[in-house]
Every structure is written in structure tokens, then in C-alpha cells.
Amino acid sequence: MATLCDTNILIDLYGESQHWNAWSRKAVAAARRSGPLVINPIVYAEFSIGYTSVEAVDAVLDARVFDLDALPWAAAFDAARAFVAYHRQGGEKRSSLPDFCIGAHAMYRGYRMLTRNPSRYRAYFPDLELISPETQP
Image 1 (cartoon, rainbow, N blue to C red):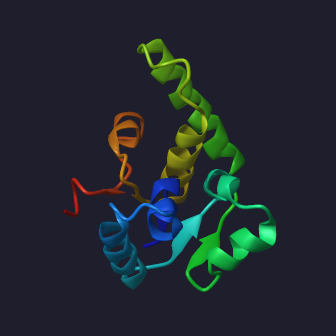
Image 2: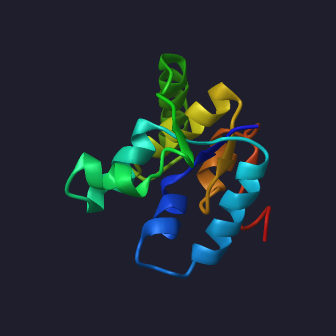
């Protein structure tokens, strides 16, 4: 089964902070044993903020490790519905739509989700299988 990697996992693997590096490396290795690892353009965009060129990002995000998958239109629609529900339930105005797009993408494609921040995914995509420090200590 394929696993969509959240941006925080990529930051753990390739960023300067080492706090979550070991957990994320172990979780990525386990996920790769059961299927491909996927990132979408939203994860790519969030991750690439610290880089100066597409080539630099692509050099880090090894194509042998990560498959690229575009956000389906229907998943974008589902993300908008979840985002509206979030705001109606008192969600913070500064919360961004990208997390909802990432979760809807995983849900729509039938992917698992690898993240360190499962609460919003759990709340708005309850059928999404999550791999997080809570589920895989």
C-alpha cells in the first residue's frame, strides 16, 4: 500500500533539526517495505521553501525514494469541504488549506498518511490510516 508523506516528515529527514530524525527515518523505512512513498505538489511546495532552485529540491528528494502524484480534482473538492467544516467548528482563521488538500489526497487515492501531526487528519478524514508517533512509537 502506498503512503503519502507529510511535509514534516521530509523536514525531519532533510532539515537541520535532529529531534524527530530517527523516528521519521524508521517510519519511512517501514512504509517503503509495504509500498511506494508518495509526495504531492503541496508537500513539495511546503518543503521547497528553504531551497533556491527546483534542482536543489530535486537533488534532495530522491526520485528512487519518492513518487510524485498530483492532487486529483475530486480530492481538492473534498479538501475544501473539510476546510469549511473546520472553520464552522471554530478552527483558527490562520490555519491553511494545504493540510486539508494533503489529507484529502491520501484519502481519495487510498493511501496511508505518514505524519507527526495527526490530529487534523484524524478529525476531518477519520477513515484515513495514519502512521504517526502515536500509532508507531
